[in-house]
Every structure is written in C-alpha cells, then in structure tokens.
Image 1: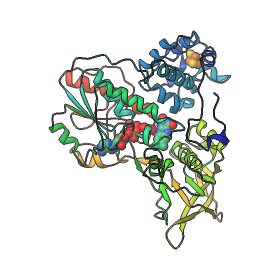
Image 2 (image 1 turned 30 degrees about the horizontal axis):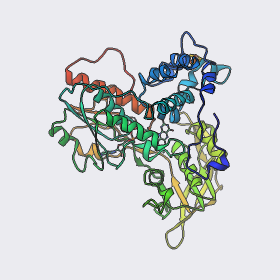
Image 3 (image 1 turned 90 degrees about the vertical axis):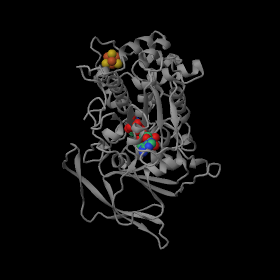
Image 4 (image 1 turned 180 degrees about the vertical axis):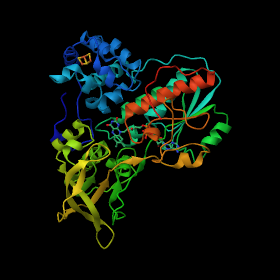
Length: 468
Ligand code: FAD
Ligand code: SF4
C-alpha cells in the first residue's frame, strides 16, 4: 500500500498509508485461493466471513463485501487500521505458508473507506426504528467495548446511556492511538453512528465519583456494562522517576491526541517537546509515543527495550514505520535510575546492557543484566511506556464485585460479573489487550444482558469474547 514518504510524514500528523484504489483492492482480493476450509477465519476474533468478502471484492461488488464484514464487525474502518492482522487472520491464511498472505486488513480498511465516501457518512446502515422495550441499560466507558455493547443493545430496543469520564467518546481510539495511525474523524463517525441509534452520551461523568454502579442500578437501570479499560499507567519504580519531564505514555499521548497539544498555543494544553526524547518500552504504545515525539519536533528519539527486536510486542508494521522515521532503537537495554539537574528537570537516565537468558513465564527469554555495562543516555523528555493496568475506582466503589489479583474485574465468558445485573468486558477484564477483543466482549455482553432481561437461557455453544 502506498504511503507518505518517511521524511515528509515526520513533519505532519496525517495518516501514513494512502489506502488501496479499487483496482488494487480487486487485484489483491483475487490472490485469495477461496479455500474449502478457510483457515483465515480461525484467526478472526469476531468471525468475519473473510473468504466471502474477498470473493465479493474480487468481483468489484464492494457493497456486498462491506455488508458481509459488518454482519459481525461494527468498526471495520478502525479494525482495518489497528488490528494486529499479522498474528490473527493473515497469520492463518493458507497462502502465507508459501507466499505473502492476502492483505485482509488493508482490504477491510479499503471497504470501510469506500462505503464512507459513497454515503458521505460513516457508512453504517441507516438506523432502523426499533420498538423500545422499556429497559434502560447503563454503559460505563465509551471505548470499543462500551460502544459495541451500546450499539447492539440499542438495536435490540434498549434505552442506552453511556457514561464517559472524558469530554469525548472513543476511549483509547480517541485519546491513545495517534491521528497518523487512526484519524479521529473516523472514530467520531463511528461515535455519531452509535448516537444516531438513540444512545445517549453523558460526558465528564466519572462513575465511582459522580454516581456509583450501585447508584445506577438504584436509579432504575436494569443492567450496567463496565467497559472502563486499562488506563492506569505502570511506572518503573526507579530512583528519580518523579523528575520534571518524565511522562507516562498515557499522559503524553492524551495531551497530544485528545487535548491537541501538537497545536499549542491554538489548543490550550501544552506538552514538553524535548530535543532528545527517550521512550521506555516495546509495545504499540511505545511506538506511538516515539513517533509522536518525532512529529512534535524532537531532534533525537531513542526507544529503550530490554529484550531484542524479535521479542518486541508491537505490531511489525509499527516497528517498521518507526525505523523508517528515524527512531533509534536501543535493544537489550534497561534504565536503572533517572538523573535530573538542580532544578528537578530530567537530564537523562543511567542504563545497563542486557543479554537474553532462559525463557520466563511469558515464554520469552528473560533479560539478564551484563555486569559493568552501565552507560548514560541523555534525554530532556522521557516517556515510560511499560504497560497499563485497570483503574481500581469501579472495583473500590461497587459492592460485591469480584476482581483478580491484577485488579481486573472477574467476568464469565458471557461478561457476567459476580454482581447481579453488572457485566464487564474489554481491557477491564482482559488487562491491556486489543480493540477487536474489546469489541467482541461488548457484543457478547450485549447478548447476555438481553437474554437475562428476557429470562432466556444461554446457548450451549461458546461465544467469542471475554472469558473468566
Ligand atoms: P478503552 O478503550 O480504554 O476505553 C475505556 C473508556 O472508559 C475510556 O474512554 C475511559 O475514559 C472511560 N472510563 C474509565 N473509567 C471510567 C469511569 N470510572 N467512568 C466513566 N468512564 C470511564 N489495540 C489494537 O488492537 N491495535 C493497536 O494498534 C493498539 N494500539 C494501542 C495504542 C495505545 C497508545 C494504547 C493505549 C492501546 C492500544 N491498543 C491497540 C489497545 C486497545 O486500544 C485497547 O485494548 C482497547 O481500546 C480497549 O478497549 P476498552 O473499550 O476495553 O477500553
Ligand atoms: Fe483466502 Fe487465505 Fe482465507 Fe484461504 S486462508 S480463504 S487464501 S484469505
């Protein structure tokens, strides 16, 4: 897929790939073998009928193709851009055993964009008026889990209200993932579609502070779905970590994306634009932070990761783009303390070199410090991107809701928590995971809420989505 040149794109926040045109899409879809047993589908958490949509694209029948995707995936423009297809559908594609797998994600993105351009809207089917059933359901959090759950319930006839802590809906899609990977207009179009179904959004409404989950139930909501994500940043706990200029990736990206700090002073919120920036971590969040730093004008951006490139959890595409853009990768390297000047401003960190030892619990080889390898890495801004966990607020303020040792809410495979009438899904159950898993969990919980309120038994077969 054609994309902006690396030297040009580091100077702007526009999306990197340009997307396929119709001819390219048809040519790519024609590579599909139309397997009798399409293994690609085993890799899709929301069971998109990939083989059929590829056949429709090959024939130039784009309307049918997007219809097939939307039968099970409500956010194709988002998933086509950010899903880790290389470890999901594309990894399972038979063609990939000998050649390059079919570019399923790029085609999904093409179709979603094609449909939006045709209709001048988000492309979703026009909402059909559904008779209201008299039940009110509250959704806490407007990320992919909450939006999916809300849309499905609204389509079933429920009166749905989403309570969102921020002033905008979309969760990580709007505050975390940068514009150059996922344009905010696309997320907003999806939010507008959910609103067009009759879903009410209450912004700046932190559940656990303004109302609790228990109070929502007392106020007459028949069920509450908790999709509050995993937005609590982890820190390293190293000496000097409180210095000025050290951000969590969460804060750094929220300032830049949601609060538009890249447009300061036109936008109200500033962010420190370091000359030399160091980002600690190796996931998508770290890549997003490093690439954002380049676009904010930093001269040198280093990414410090304690294992090697092979073990990096970030998507290959993101690593490749970061390399092209000039991020310096310091592999097998870990900070041991942060150094600041007399005024408390960070000036860098002391690091050590690592080597890989035996595999740990995660199956990845454990990094072991090389004695005497200390060195100083200068930086005037440091971004810590070593992971996020669930915010404990909901668990602390909801009676009788069970959590795990990691602080995630316990839910069964249908999204039911230990508390009657309360359901949960997405990162708040799984820990920091993926957009598609959050959407799957929202869908599964919507069906469970509907069954419970109508007194219908669960189906015998498993559903995709959150598990205990
Ligand atoms: P979130 O998206 O976290 O949404 C939760 C929402 O709940 C937020 O809007 C929050 O403000 C709100 N909320 C929280 N507490 C309360 C409260 N008490 N009251 C009211 N509202 C509340 N996944 C991918 O698949 N591909 C990627 O490329 C990718 N890149 C990522 C990059 C970054 C920078 C980050 C941070 C994550 C990335 N992920 C990616 C992970 C993915 O975004 C998450 O797994 C997904 O967004 C989880 O969805 P969710 O609905 O569970 O929660
Ligand atoms: Fe086509 Fe690959 Fe799926 Fe086979 S596995 S149907 S080649 S996309």
